[in-house]
Image 1 (spheres, rainbow, N blue to C red):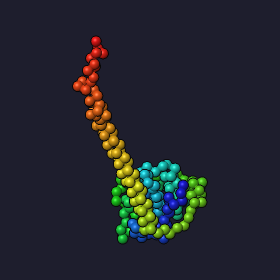
Image 2 (image 1 turned 180 degrees about the vertical axis):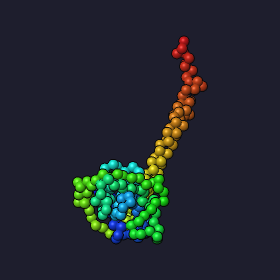
Image 3 (image 1 turned 90 degrees about the horizontal axis):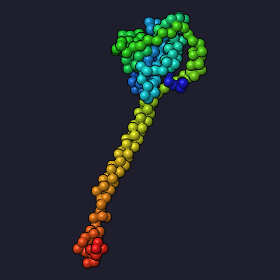
Image 4 (image 1 turned 45 degrees about the vertical axis):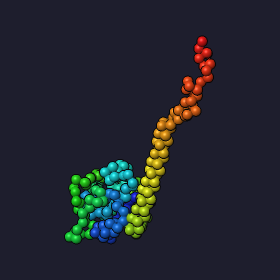
Length: 207
């Protein structure tokens, strides 16, 4: 798993309002994870192109849930806890909320993962990939959008080239069909097949 796929943001050091303001300038993160009814760090999963928040592979979902539990002071000490997750865009934050506190625009877009206990092998494996970063989200967004525009432009160019090639092939086939009998209907061939230009002894062959 690429380390940059999962972000852990400590609620105490990065209030959601500030993180949202920074993230609005950057790429959308995909999915948000939090321990239900307990204080915890915010865990964000950056989805790859083609992935959706409601179709996260089970192994990756378990990784995110375990990492969320491990980064909760209270949740890490308890068994049988619930992790909630939702699309990043579904987060709701206003000025009256405490640092780290969030709500949701649509409760129907909130799902739950039950975690029976901490799985140290999973947590230890993920911690080995841990890298502390202070990303420039605006620069990341510009780079991402630039790459996306190049890919889309390349796809359009390839489609345009393919359409032109298919048009040329259709025109060529039409021309061939329209002119298939040109040689047979040439003046020389018509004259050669006409009775009026045949030798006077032509019918002798049939006697």
